Picture (tube, rainbow, N blue to C red):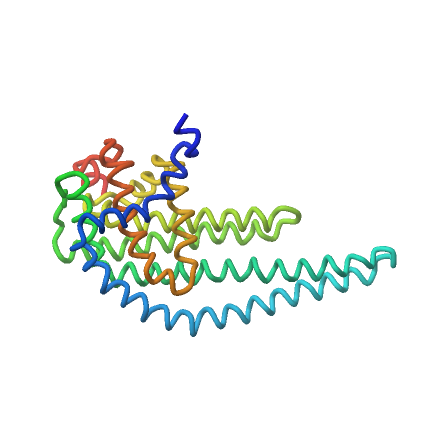
Length: 279
């Protein structure tokens, strides 16, 4: 019954970023690991907000105005008794601005995560190790050397980029289909973004075990629908300007707690030996 009420783990997945508050309360020394990442997020956010967000907002305004103008031209050819549709166009224009604004906030927060997680990796990595030690009593690390770590980090980012471009390419063509094409494309884009978010926030715990990129993707599928709930709440938290400077470290820490509870303690992660052989 509890499983049904929590959406078979969906709501439980949403709780993980906030569970870090309880860990910090009982282990306040861990707070020191998020101070530098928060400062880094602040610096990155200045450049993103001043550059990308302002530019993106102008683009969305132009795009919205173009859509409204085309609809206005379409209405000119309709009978006069349909003139009341003008009010519908006004409402539609308002809704489009809200939708485009939300998408822009998510994209800005998404980029903040990409840069913030990479630059804050040393502190996030240490936080993740301490959290895993608290949850499981031990930390498993497969050492591949300094250059091996760098190579794996670069390869991880490249594979994420390939995934984004390949799926994004398909979604672009889906968008040109009449009818529900745009809606399906938007839904696909949100699924893709949620997947990348899970990869970023789970990676601190998964990378210590040197899982392959495909195995990391597999962990998201194995932990559904809890991983979907986790990605939804993280997308919300990273999309709130200024608040996301603080919430991104909580999403990173929550990702490690998620992996420990939903994957590691349940024995759902590939064995270390299999991961090394499959690379």
